[in-house]
Amino acid sequence: MAKQLTRDLNPPAWMGSKGRLVWKILPMLMKSKLMRLIAQTITRFTIESTSESKIGNHIFILSSANPRLDMRIKTYATKEPETLKWIDGLEQGSVLWDIGANIGLYSLYAAKSRQCKVVAFEPSVFCLEFLARNIWMNDLQNLISIVPNPLSNETKINLLTLSSREWGESSNSFGTKLNQDGVEIHQSLDYQVLGMTLDHMITKLGLQKPNHIKIDVDGIEPIILSGGTNLLKDVDSVSIEVPTYSGANVEVSDILIGAGLTLEHQLGNQIWRRNPA
Image (cartoon, rainbow, N blue to C red):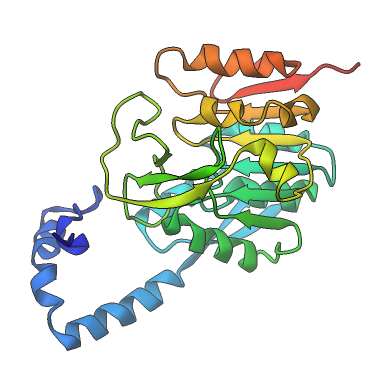
């Protein structure tokens, strides 16, 4: 049986009772050509919405097409201060891989503040457009490249599971349906896509080796790291959000210690560094 995406989609959490009532009757309203035209026009205007955000001396123009994107902008400077501080310490012009880039906030900051050459990995179709828009609006196309594929411990086609179809959402997974807490993801949409390993990004695609890696993918961080044991031996530092499920911290630690890195900071995201020879 064909799936009815509009009818199966739950109303966003931010909607009030009146908004949820409208949401329930939308499928019936959308049978009208006039209503579809109105909806398409509203979507075109909504998707162009932007807001400004300032971090330090840097001003960013960012897509703010829905409350989720707007929330990300409002918490840009406060959500992960340790990540911004880590980026502030990166060498000018160094190479950063941002794994789980979402709409690109940290990619943008690294490119603008440190002139980093950034590779932004983001497979979700509901984030990719806004990642691209944010890069373009801030004129950073020459510094940030997008890889729209997930990473894993082997290069193969597998199922990408998305927990939401809202723009800018996260909590997705590849090759498993478990989230960072080890709980099965509420499936909103899934599809088959090619995933690759960190090592194959170098040996098969010829990407420039990263000096630094930021990884925040809501659950499969250990799986991704296990596919980059060769690459990690040459990385200077890693910023990682460690999943909370049992055993995840040990898995991450074993891989990064094996690569010669030392844990420096573990409040919020963990920061791992290579000690000077």
